[in-house]
Every structure is written in C-alpha cells, then in structure tokens.
Length: 411
Image: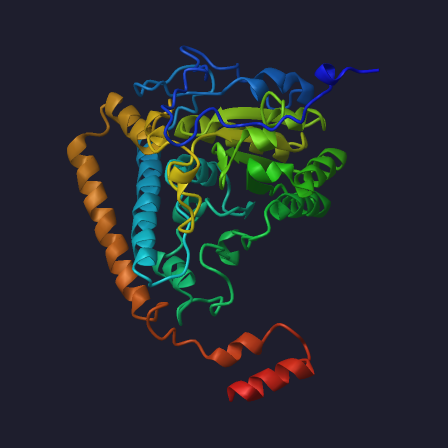
C-alpha cells in the first residue's frame, strides 16, 4: 500500500508574483547576440523544434538588429509600421477615456502588443483573411479602416454599420478581410483552418490567419484547428499571443508543463515558431516565413508571440488585484513602439522631434475623428438607431413571441 506521506497531491500552478511582491523576470533568458537560425520555409515541420522552444529575435534592446531573421525593411516601411502602432495606441487611449466618462460600455486596449497586429498586417496581403481576437485592432489601422467607423462600432450609434448589434471591440470589417470577432474564445482558430482549406480547394494562393490568446489554447477549438490544419495541410497561420495573463489567470494555467505554446504545434506535425512579440522586425519576419510556407503548399504554421499585457484585460478589470502594480514596468523585452523608434534612430532615420510631432499629429487626428463619431450618438446620448432594427435580420419569419415584444414596445 502507498503510505499517506507518499500520496500524490493536486498541483495548482501559481504565478511567481502576487500583489505586494517585487517582480523579477531574471528567470527569463534573453538571447544576447543570436536567435534560432532561420531555416528554409519548406523545412520538415519537425525540423523547427529549436525555433518553437527558443525565441526568434531581430532587434536587440539597444535598437540594433542581428541574426538571419532580419527582414531588412527600408526606412519608409519602418516609419509606416511605427505610425500604425502609435495610431493604435492613441485610439486606445481616447476610447478608454471615453468609456470611463460613460460614453461607451466597454473597451479593450492592446498596449504593449501593437507590434504583433501591425507587423502581421504589413507582412500579409490585403486579400488574406484575418480571424482576430480582441487585441488586434492594429490590423485595422494598417489596413486603412477609417477611424470614425471603428469608433462608431464601439459607440453603437447611427454610424455603426452593425446597427449596434455587437458589443464594442468585436469589430467586423468584411471589406478589409477582418472576420467578425467572436466573444467565445478559441472559435476563430477552427474557422480559420476551414477558410484556409477552402482557399486551397479553390486553387488560390490566399491564406487565412488566426489569433488567440494563450489562455484560449486550453479550449478544445484550438486543438480541433491544429488537427484539421495538419490533416489537410491548410494554408493557415495560427497565432498564439502569449501576453502572460488570461484575465486574472497567469499563463502557467494554460501552459501546463510544456516548454512553450508554439511547441504544441509540433505534436501535430506543424511548423512552429516562438517569437519576441515586442520586436516589430521579428514578428514581420516570422509572419513572412509562414506565408511563404503556406502559399507554396507547406501547410500551416503555429506562431507564439511572447509578449506582455501592460494594462487590464478590459475596462472591467483591475490587474493590481492579481499581479504587482510594477510588473509591467520591469518586463524585460521593453515596449514595441520604443524599440522600433530606437531602431530608426540608430539608422539615422528618426529623432525625438519627429517622434513628438507624429504623436501630436496622430492625437489630433484621433480627437477629430472621435468628435465626428460622437455626434452620431453615445451611450450617454441618443444612439439614433431605430430600436425596431433589433428584431430584423435574425429570423426569416419573426416568431410569435418576438412579434408580441415588438408590439409591446410600440415599434
């Protein structure tokens, strides 16, 4: 018989730091001079084990590039990426402030994760369909969605093409290849695998690109997507944004004992990469590598973007309740905007004066766009949407109980 002392005990992972602790990320190994090498995109999937468990980087923390993953983008392209990231952050700040003023119900910022969305969008074709989760608004900036339309969707007003039928931040922009965001986490992954399979079936070289947080990799949908992508060699990129926190649960809950989230792709025979998500150039290079593989019949790639959520999960969340207040400030991989700006400075293509001027310009652009959107209604003022529209375009034949409700409302 097993003695009482030797019986197993339930193990529950705990984050290394809680409120009141002094955070220290010295346990995270930062490659000094190199990253895992850049293999041929058509390499056998199992040959990417080093790339799945290491950390692909281009930019050092001082702004200088190194290694063979450097995509060697020209200065204009780098400045374009910087502009999109800064615009994303300006929009986030404005919309967060408006939610706090009671003018909209809900918002989710992407602070610290802008490089993942923007660099991905710039590395893709406009015809590639994106299946996002709720912190990829930078893709919409890079694809040129008018700010007023984004803001109207958040305000659910008369300018909202969805007519107020979706909660804020669940954007839907079909014309820009931005699939409707789902509030049910993980569902986008299997949908993207199916879209990629359809692209291959039709004989096009378009691809699908999905995003999910690390917490949702514990959902069954994630594994369904890996299985379908593997079986049918779907031209799809499955991105896992590991920002360390799934609401108040730290990444170790979903990670278990695995070396990385990217490594899970290897078990399904999928090429897998783990990339510094705060490094614009590394994200761009990884997405380009995966697109080349997908378009040439190599199948899917799983990419883990190693990053950090600097702010709360949403406007409904207070992160100081579950992590040290100073933790975002000591994240060892810095800020993606600062790192790209620093790189441009090292190239002699940027300086503080131009950076400040761009911030001023973008802040003014966001302010004026918001004024136009707000004029069409907010949560604190009439939305100017016909309430009768809530009964439309849901059922082909309106059920009796909804007809009664509409009559009771007098609409």
